[in-house]
Length: 486
Image (tube, rainbow, N blue to C red; front, top):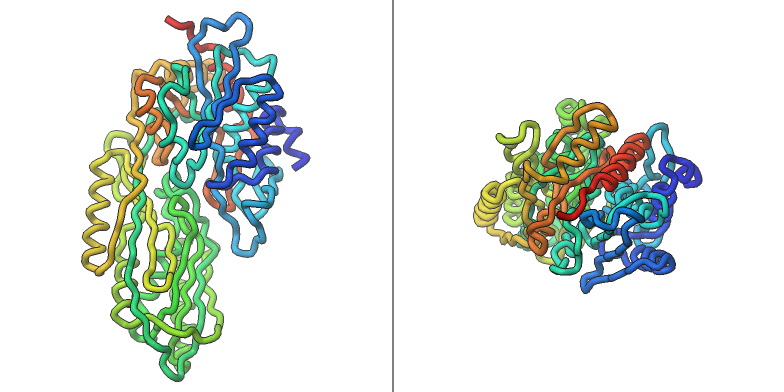
């Protein structure tokens, strides 16, 4: 951590160190929020915590820039809590162990929280500076962006006076974002009936691990393995011949992260244990060949366990495995209007087993409402065929691109002037909060920028050091170029 504070720009990295030191996973942002509030009030800044927990911090314009249009810099307070299976870490209590690794900053076995900690650190560094030039400034730090966008949903009209919003949640230097996908959560409830364990059974746990995972929107087009889908594929193919009887199945931990690990506890006739081992070995070789370019570390492992009290009935198990295997996943359609950008996708993110059902959590994303609605009807049809229930919740709108956006032009021109090259104007297949902000602030002009972050939402997350400096230079230059009020 000590090495971080020596990086450029120092005020930003010093703040990022503080952010890493204070636990702030989704739903647990209060300690970090209170730390920021205490600091801001000591500086004499105006601080408001709204009813849902968002922070709004206001700072007057620097001398000579009082007549500029007011700007809000926006980031979210929370981070995605993901760790490797062998890492002992409590995200509600333990600090993030960030360190410099060559040209990157990453963390020891966990997500780093550069998404959106770097953006938050940049906003706070600007608030604390007496040298950076800017007009009337507001900083909006929202809660719970990664687990439901509660803060963005709860933002009320009249809280912000700014005419321009700069979102800092993008993850590729050299790209300017002017739109994003909307989304909705889908939850299957698959009923399960139980029976006693047959005599002569052996209990085992089959685990699949070693996948890269990642952001279920930004990384969905990369062809990475989904642990839940791969495990379901094996079970559907082999359950009948091996007489497998499931006692539980689980995988993933967040609906907006591609699942890296999954496991199933099951029983089978003891005489078929060797055959199971052989089939696992063949399946591992098969998927290693199929996914060699993107998942070089995939691993299946088998361990013997004590017998459970009960296993699923054959009819329940068949319906469950067929649903898991048939459920759509990955890219549904690429955009016709924006080359190279995913239009519609689905991530089967989480599987959990409870007393009388298996819960399956998915996240649908789409740049267009009709694309999202189409996938919803597909899942509803699948649920009906499987005798399950599916519900949809937390729908949030996309951010419709505005090619004539004045602030986007300012950012574009500023980038060209600084770096002597053309940035890429993009729409991102992820749920930026800008679409939700448009409801209480329909006239607000918005743009999104950020440094290069690799593998967000997974324990391999890293942020490129050089691009943090480039993002910082661009942000400060844009603030200086904000025009006067008309």
